Length: 152
Image (cartoon, rainbow, N blue to C red; front, side, top):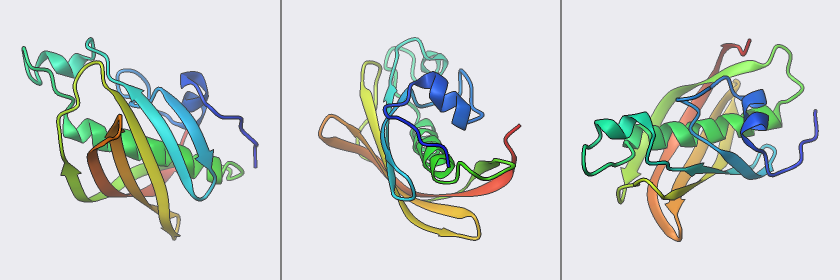
């Protein structure tokens, strides 16, 4: 398995995930313990395209994009944990359970995503996820991702 130095910037994240702008939802990975947990950051910028319609004059990051950011952080954890697999699997969102949204996330917020691996079974990963702005939990969910094909 390849050893990685943390933090990871966007270019290093793009080596692990197939997502690209405007759908890459994480900007940096601050720490990662393979097979255990990852912490990633999304800087919520005012010029993100979804804010034009969600909601004009009162921009709010859609909850589904917070869930996607948590899933992408989980994808980083899976890839770092299984870096020696060839071909490299494409982990796809399979299920979201118990999603909770506690307060809106708005432009200027620094969204910290903490993802803990709960279990791995038949290549599927169960992640316990939490999103924070500062010390406040803004969202949480259990996310299940499954390998769905080659990355390339």
